[in-house]
Image 1 (tube, one colour):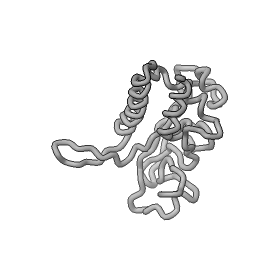
Image 2 (spheres, helix red, strand yellow):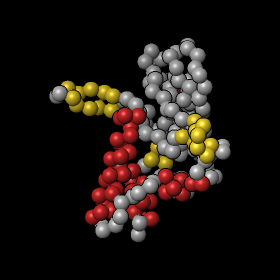
Image 3 (cartoon, helix red, strand yellow):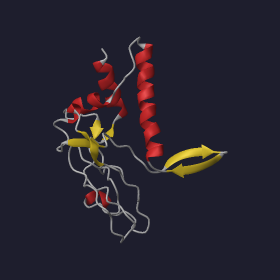
Image 4 (tube, one colour):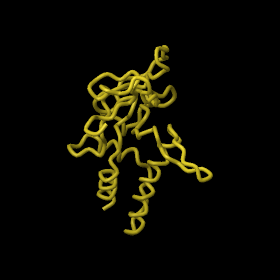
Amino acid sequence: AAGKPDVVCAVNAEGPSVEGIDEASPILVTSGGGYSQDWKRPSWQDGHVDNIARGIPDLALLGHGYTIVIGGRFLSVDGTSAAAPTLGGMVSSINADLKAAGKPSVGFLNPLLYRNANTSDSMFTDVTEGDNRCAARGAPCCGGYKATPGWDATTGLGVPDYRKLRAAILAESA
């Protein structure tokens, strides 16, 4: 809702942002996340991820209610398959600006994201309410993590602000 912080999952969320959510039809989309069993934490996550393993995810985007058109019909889709192309579109747009300025494309983005995460004008909206333990109402869940200030295993660094992401990338390419 306008003026309220983003919430990871309304089913299990606690706090003022979920007050007034329609209990009959809450948003049931959640975030994956956690820690790799195979990869150690990369150096660019130092100071953000408090675990020896690679923390996942790096960032988050809205994963609910994307409008698409198939065969002339409007449909609503959810999930990573909707959110990931949105981030790809953001980076593609920034790459077009870089190309027009005669500069190289963004390349590997993660170190830049983490370098710019804890600034006073962070490029991320930090998601601090909810968790990724969503299950059907009343059903037990298998684990998960709570959203907390800073990097967390539900929404990573948070939701990127396109204008700030673009400004940070262009500044580093100057």
